[in-house]
Image (spheres, rainbow, N blue to C red):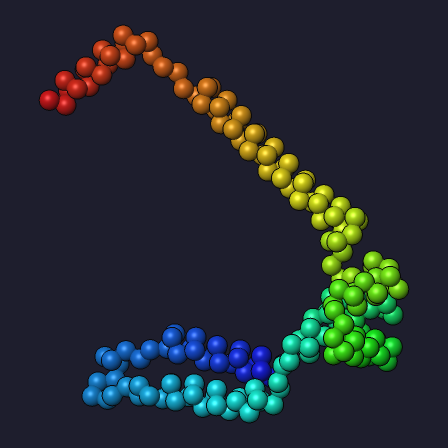
Length: 185
């Protein structure tokens, strides 16, 4: 988390550096301090270098964190395993981390969790039949609504054009065009 806050501060300083510019006319006879802002950026990044080295992120640790965010807590409905601060959730996270460090695959761990606690253990239910319905129905309804709206707009535009435009007979139109062209000469 400290690394993230350092990166956010760095991004803000970079954005500030691009947004702040001193006009030369406002400071006649004085030079602009051109090296101050880059120096400030270098110091802020160098200050966070020790924290970046103090938190080595291994693939196993990242996979453990990712998996605990994708699995719902069986002890408290509505929270992921990573968000629930009980001792039982801590033990389950520790068990998952141990199994991952022993080389067990992610799919095997998730499969066993689903077999033990049921498919509601998954934070993303899209792999279950109910999940397909939950995700598929709103998408299908949105597509049908868009098609219906397009058909309605096309039909109303045709009706508007047909009602509002009346063309004079072709002979009268040609005579009027000749009169207007003669008036321009």
